Amino acid sequence: MLQGTISPMRTVPAHIPRPAYADSGIVTRWAEDRVKSTEIIHRMRHACTMASDVLRLAGEFVRPGITTDAIDVYVHDLCIERDAYPSPLNYSAYPKSVCTSVNEVICHGIPDSRVLQDGDIVNLDVTTYIGGVHGDTNATFFVGEVDPASHELVKVTEECMWHGIEAVRPGRPLSDIGRAIEAHAKKHRYGVVKAFIGHGIGEQFHTDIQVLHYYDPRSTTIMRPGMTFTIEPMITVGAWQHRMWDDDWTAVTTDGKRTAQFEHTLLVTDDGVDVLTGGDGAVSPSAPWSR
Ligand code: MF3
Ligand code: CO
Ligand code: CO
Image (cartoon, rainbow, N blue to C red; front, side, top):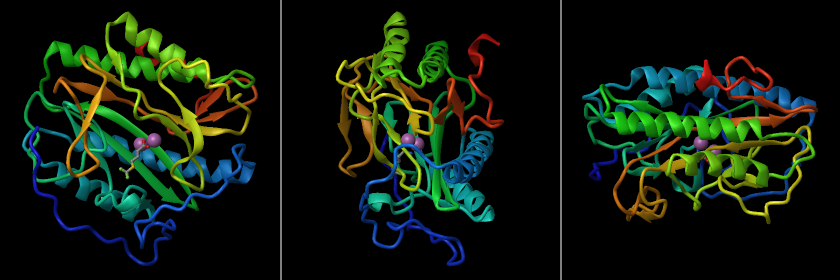
């Protein structure tokens, strides 16, 4: 994939509440409770449902011949129509309202003039800010007809995410999640990207909780009911190492082979997990790939 031209930054109407970084582009983190109040969780459900609605609509918009910039315009307008601020916009000076990561782009691809081709795969990462909290979710979509190897990569990547989600349990360490994801990826001889990880989320886009997508025994933080974080594995057919484009955002595989990603925002419950960006708020969903 070639670097295209990035259009000027779009604006958000003044009546829509903005996160603190929206004007300056500077992210200042503060200590945020890892266990959320019922009131914050209530607001997060709303933000997460909205993010999942926007992601679904954006996915339906994907087709050969459109630019990733057109997807950005679409997502930006969907957020605004819903009185939500598109969280990526000006987050650490990120210039667009959604991340669009095509083929060998691991994550944080910036929407530009590049035209999607029949056979591409594209990850859309949507985050919305409404009611003072963020909801974060992504999925990889097919552009027209894709080859069987890409089909398999995308399917297994989604399975990896669900294996991670099913490992979420109160009283267990976060390392259970990475172990489950890595085991499934290895079974299919795929790579797991280590440099980008899941994160705590709430009033801030990214909080201090770190969710590794591979096994590390040092990941000892115990999951507690009320904790909210994302699981967002990036899986590769070849090298899991990345290289950065000179835009300082776009991360690509070092060998140029394809990579896929899926993401949900989760809530740890008293007996398992609630997928806040899962659409209907189902508790402990049965593995959707087996349906
Ligand atoms: N949504 C991404 C994540 O899953 C973060 C994007 S940061 C941005 O954590 F600045 F690129 F938007
Ligand atoms: Co995320
Ligand atoms: Co995301």
